[in-house]
Image 1 (cartoon, rainbow, N blue to C red):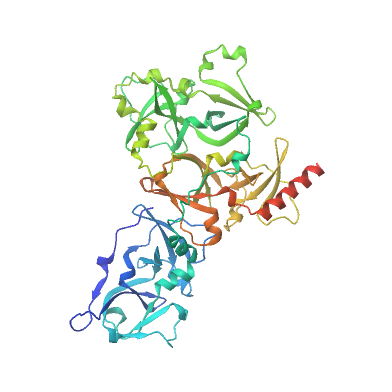
Image 2: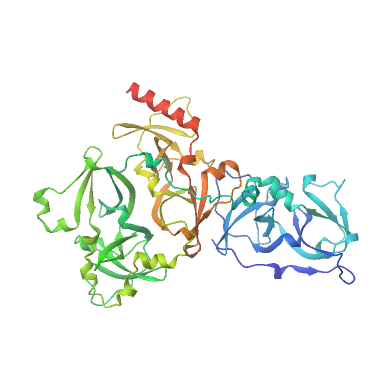
Amino acid sequence: MSTEGTLLEEVDPVASDGEENDTSSDFVTFEMAGESYALPMERVQEIIRMPELIRVPLGPSALEGLANLRGRVLPVVSLRTCCGLSTAEHDEATRVVVVQAAGATLGLVVDRVTAVVSVEADQLESAEGVQSTVRSELLAAVLKGTAGRAAGRMTTVLDVQRLVRAEFADLARKVAASGTGSGAWTPAATAAEDDSSDTLELVSFAVDGQEYALPIDRVQEIVQAPERVTAVPNAAARVLGVMDLRGGLLPVVSLRQVFGLEVPVLQPHNRIVVVTVEREGRESLVGVVMDTVREVLRVPAELVGALPHVVSGGGRSREVQSVCRLEDGKRLVSVLSADSLVDVGGLADLDLDDAAVTRTRQDQEDDVVDDGRGDDELLVVFRLQGEEYCVAVDAVQEIIRVPETLIRVPKTLDFVEGLVNLRGAVLPVVDLRTRLGLDRSARDERQRIVVLIIQGVRTGFVVDSVAEVLRVGNAELEDAPELSPEQAEVVTRVANLPRQDRMLLVLEPAQLLGGAQVAQLVDEVRSSSTAA
């Protein structure tokens, strides 16, 4: 997701006739829809090729997305749209002019950058009375008689300050007000209202068609299996080897090997669940290979029980510490013990330096610059229309499959899919795509319902798929640029992960529904419960 380097050196510099003096000004000229335009050079930071973008829901129409500019989040906007011109496909000539105006930094997409010109005062004319295809309030001046590609025709100078203030008032206002408050977001404030003391939070996964789970406080992150794991001589049978995890070596254990099952070659659908294990008084990280990761579960304590005595007498009791009875006992999930699962004592036999094999949680924290915002955050990552979004794991009550049928509610909100029965309670279900202004999609097996609590109301949100549970350092979390009022409330932060070439949009659960919308959902739930 990183952009390419600056391209200013590719632009032909064009000096005006005669020697330069204090009355000359420099401009970057470019083309849009066959016309010539310019921006003051003092506003231009650099010029880059079109980067990869992530789309931002509920943003202004001119916003094309966010890019990673050498570790910095850069809003990229269509200058054609800002100027009221028809849109066009990007091609090899398309460039992004990075400008700073009204205290904000933006990337402006243009058709083609033509030159950097030095213009004398007598070649600048006021824009008053000039007719153009752009809105008149964006005109700053007109260049006459420039050289190069635009020679012999007028070049319109755009007022980039006014452009930013008019099109992205929220962004400019936020920058101007920066320093007046921390702007820190406390995740899952509403979720705290729900009594979670009697619940067990788990990450569930499948191995050979059976469902297992690990306590979520032991799960540091979930990553895709690498192409290969490096074998280690004299390692225990369950240890496949080691893999690279952000510069450190991570021991990888096969859960299939632990259970005495066939161990196939790692496939792209396999996931490595990175768990913390206790070893000689310190916490170490170990990767456990799963067939697939399924869901995040928040299970009431009364649904969790110990293994029956007749079963606990067997050898498997060390790995399975309890069983969850879900869906009226039709679905059983075995909860594993992380410490017993990986047999930490056996890891000591690895013929590797201990410091190189495992990275403790403290080691990871040393890699993250402390910016005063507290500990790292655990995020549930899901996908919508090809983009990655996330919410704090504390906000997620559970994640369930989309049922075959939903109870439709007439005259409801356009993004409400219907109601489902969740263990005897009525759960309203919202299509998150529609709520965020994205295209609605057909149902498929990968979709999941992420259950959140919005202003005290338990609400399910349909997402395309749940990708992983990811631990993100606070140094990698930054405030999202405020590009529109609704977007600024819903998309509050960005998890910028340049090492992984990823950028995740962090949603604020409390803002996904407004007060009036929540009240309507409450009425619908009450009506449905009464009817039942």
